[in-house]
Length: 283
Image 1 (tube, rainbow, N blue to C red):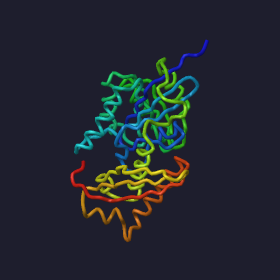
Image 2: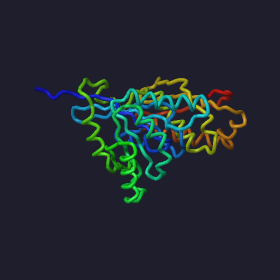
Image 3: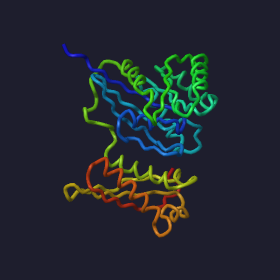
Image 4: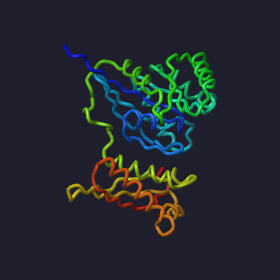
């Protein structure tokens, strides 16, 4: 008699830059969600598929939960709140380097959701052990969460115990994704996300938050070679020169870095073409 399969959704929620995307990429073993030092990098729900023995887990990487001020901000937070309701298990990612008071709203949202919850203290490699123990005890006593894990998503420390627990919590059911699926994002979506990641990395201050990257065209006329056309949409005309850089130097760096990541993903030669356009109030 064959062992029944298990499948479930796991929502990763947390403050901006808590390490949600890093954790998912580490677990999946591939970059399916972009990571930058800037907050609010993740703007939409990104799904990553993890398989261990008879269990398939669909991780939902969500935008950070914060106090929204624009329509885009509100949409991002709503994505995270919706993922909580869709999930079979919610992992609350806590940046152990921050104060517990910074996470009070997040932990309250998780508590009031009524969903199965586990708490993940991330960045333990940067946090004193005594502080971690106090943090875990306080969370348990204040919010009643008893399943608390300590990990370093960046260094893949402590993730094995977390994954073992997650697998045990997944309900019986058929797998919804093929064995070789990593994500539900298309290659075109992943390519635009890689470009946005590089823009966040090379640009400073508020400019990255005032832009988006749109897919225009994907051409594969020659076997083993892909031409990709994307459009970078910005809010203000005076930002165009900053995005392009002196004599186009910055946009060239962005193109080359994104091209490299896309090439590693699809294992083909890549030519990436970027156009910068102004569209006021796109957010």
